[in-house]
Image (cartoon, rainbow, N blue to C red; front, side, top):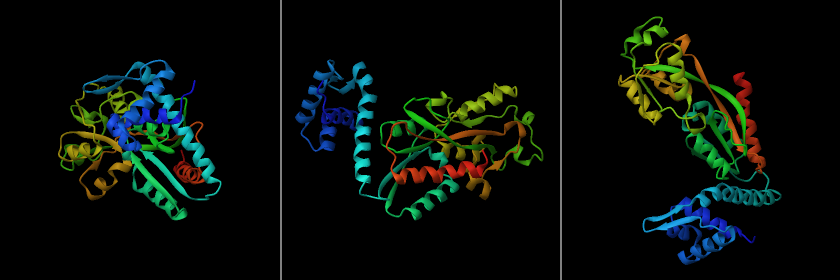
Length: 305
């Protein structure tokens, strides 16, 4: 088989850019040249990778099957180039960290600032995404490292436990529970909750499932859940009195400090979600990437988890 890198690159770029025309622009090629590369690739693999229609091109089953291997091949090539370049470049280059947006706490921000001061010639690029998207960015080589909730079962990804993020039950300052001296689980009866929609653990911010499971264990399984996919929107709705919220402690530090949200110290609702650092199992990690891993891992030791 004589599959060439530029053919694989064209295939992946068509998908990422959303079509042949945009892929041609990104690759600085003509559209016929991109089409020709894809035709040669399809000839080698023996099946069409796209269904061409008037509305555009969609991946065939063969295309979906080939995609993760194509992404892994391109990522491996980038690793090889980076490894060779590192022979002549110490403490240089770019490290991309993908992370779930709710993890961008003041503590993490301070650690990233420390990294930038210690490595002034390294460009630290940050990308935010949902947990499943963080893994996807790492798996295809668009990010060297990722911070997400829950370990990822993908065998091509290494998940390193970092720490456990405390979850805090919050309400509006004018809520009846905000005035309770010793709130308890029984007082939660009849209260609606503002939360992420429940998804499988590998699919997103699955502490939403932890909420539903804990409520069910407390006999509150019939509680109304208002599904909101934005944490910022959740906070605003809770502040406005639409319901209670169960949110990462680091994400509500500012609201608790200024008093727009109140924390409910209910023993039965003390929960924590695992945060893990992910990287590709066979990835080349530059010295700067390893230094960033070491700095992020310090948090695990200091957190005592």
